[in-house]
Amino acid sequence: MKNRTQASYIPAAVHHKHDLGQHFLYDANLLRSLVDKTGLTSADRVLEIGAGAGTLTRVLCETALSVTTVEVDKALIPRLLELAAEFPNLTVIERDIRKLNLRELFHGEGFKVVANIPYSITAQILDLFWGKGLPVSRISVMVQKEVAEKLTATPGDKAYGLISVRCRYYCEPEIAAHVPASAFTPPPKVDSAFVNLTFRNAPPVPVLDEPLLWRLVRESYNLRRKTLLNGLKKTVPLPAEVLREVLANISVSQTVRGEELSVEQWIALANAIRTSLRPFPASERC
View (cartoon, one colour):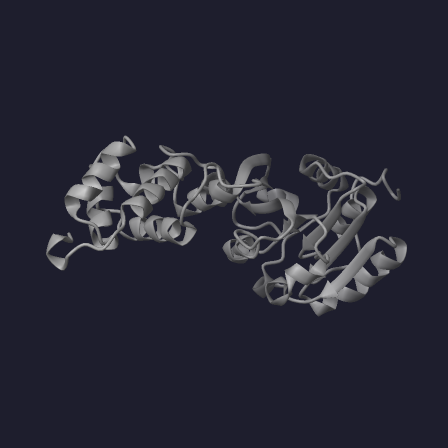
C-alpha cells in the first residue's frame, strides 16, 4: 500500500465545476475512515461513481481487489490515468454513469458501489441499481443529510416517504457517518452523511405482483391527503366493501394514510389485492 501515512491528499490545483456539483474530500484520514465503514476487503470489486480529484479513488485502490471508476469530467481524466499508472488495479472510464451499460461492466461478477456524487442526481443514481437485478451487494454513497434521513426513515418518522419505502424494499440502510460541509472543498451549503445500503437477497416478504405493489405505493403518495381506503378506491377496480375487507384482513385501519405503512404492510396489502382481483360488473366497482 502507498502513502498510508499522509494526513491529506492535495493534488495539483483542481478547478471545481459548479454545474457538475463537484465538492471534493481531501482529508486522507476521513477518507480511510469512510472506506473502513464500507466493509470493503481485498477480495472486493468496486465501482466508484464520480472519481473527482481521485482522493477517494486512491484509498479504494489501496483496499480493494479492483476499482473501476467512472468520471464524466474529461478535465480530470489525465490525473486519474496517472493514478492508474500507480495502481494497476484501477480502471478509468470517461463517461456519464447514467449512460453506461452496468450489466456488462463486470461481466456478471459481483461488485460494490462507492460514490461521492452530485446531490442533484442522487435519486437517478439509486435508480440505476434498485430493481435492476445487477450483482451489486452494497452501495456506499455520500448524500445530503436530509436524504440520508429519508433513506433510513421508518414509519412514524417525519422523514418517512416514498424513497424510504423503496430503499427498505431493496436494501437494509444505515447511516455510517455524518460529514460536515466544512470537510469538503468547496464546502456545499448542506451537511452530508455517508450511508451504506446493503442489498437484500429478496424482498422482506414474498411479493405476488411487484408492478401492482409499486403502483399502489406511488398512487398513495400522489394522494397523500386522502386516507388509504379513499386512495385505493381511485386506484383499484374493486368494490369498496372488498377493499374494506382487505384492509381488515391485514389488520390495517380504514382511516390510516398510505405514508404510515411499513414495507411489509405494503406488500401484504398488494398481495391481498392481487388475490382479490377478479372481474366485477361495472355497477359493483367503487
